[in-house]
Length: 450
Image 1 (spheres, rainbow, N blue to C red):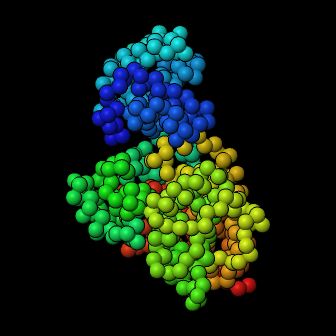
Image 2: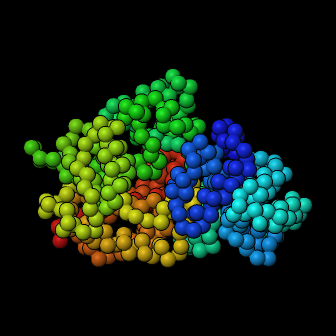
Image 3: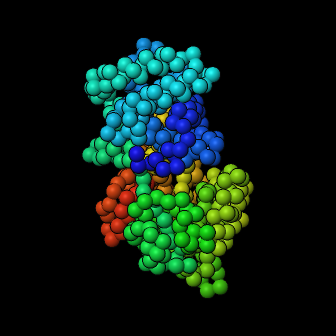
């Protein structure tokens, strides 16, 4: 019950199950989890999201059980409620409530909703049978890969091909709750000072990486000391590698000039802010691009809270003619659109929303962005390509193809594929303990004269 908060216990469970099933049905229809849970009334949202995340992490097992319980798939609203109850009840030792309670309340939820009322008896029969035959039904699904790993079959097969020695560890990590990691704004405080500030309010944390603090227990940002004043931001430890990889060791600008840096796909602004924080006293001008006007506003809000400034431009990074002033950049950060297969712990809906064809389409978009932005980099400059993906088509294979077609590009030491993990050092950055982090890919490229 790691995701559940005490406040989620106060509303009636049948109502929570109704809303959780509603969110699941929306996700199955193609709505992102973020949007689906934001549609829930604020008072109910924390508890429903906690239940929903647990359902999404066990949905493969729940759907397999439902196939054994029902010869035909029921209508989507009823199926969402049935699978919600099965996902929460199938493993009694980690269930947030007693299985009998969940079954009783799921049937109540069906009866109280006009959309599912006609299927209440069917749902009751399936769930009562599940309680009677639980061990046999679970055993019958045990050898089904989707039920065992709670990921789509194509995703499992791709991971097994891409990471033959580590695919099982990645899948298991995806089904765990991610820690809350903060980035300390070194312009305003230090990691050591912030750890003391946490301790003064009864919170525990530990230092990770250069600028990170990992909390022992997640808290709303409003409860974090100094958050409103811009002392810290929420950012995964792996994502915090971008700014130092791009900036550390980069030649200082000539006297009287600014270091020109482009953050090509910048929303919501976390990496843009870290670039500015990391630059310190170095004169730097950061251009933050974002094609979506609404998302670009989040960049401005992020920078305002942290007391930082950047040039925020609403434009398509793949069309430089629309926004580039012709002056080459010293450094470019390309955090390219991707499948988000490395951040499934935080967004458990992603695995169920993605289709196998998405990987190829996104890889084409990534290649296009690399080709469009490389000419904007001055000789001696650096481009850092990164994705929050564990798939090689969006990482190692993408960069291998780029290097084969661009003889002026040199690969610099960089982590490559980082897989979701708890603790341990990162390849390529041996002295930087990131602790528990998401999946990511990094490739640092330097431009040489042809």
